[in-house]
Length: 127
Image 1 (cartoon, rainbow, N blue to C red):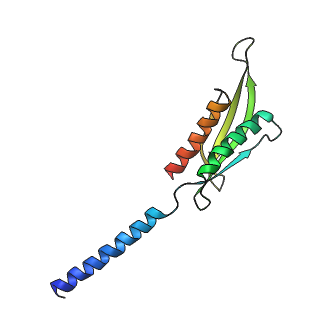
Image 2 (cartoon, helix red, strand yellow; image 1 turned 135 degrees about the horizontal axis):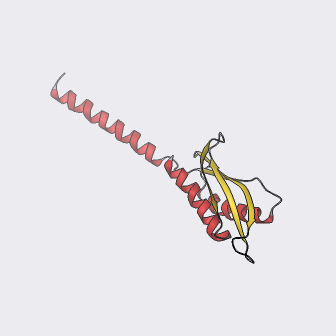
């Protein structure tokens, strides 16, 4: 094999590797998000569901890996006499219902919705 042929083969190999790398970078990035409300009768749970679905639908990529935000329950708490707060419990799973992470929040509808949405997005970026 001559030096010219060796350079030619190296050049072709480089072009093929670069093309494959570019293809993998241009594939859809993101996850296919879904929100599953385990308390559909609860108006509070419905508010969390609507907030999360609305935000995650904008980022959802149907071809991406599945991230399911499981809204487990929303319950009332009485942190001090005469006050009450609502606490939401959630879990994140993949398409096979395998556990990824979970959390709880009692900071209010907007703050807790943001916390759950951010957690789902973080799990997507970890994939």
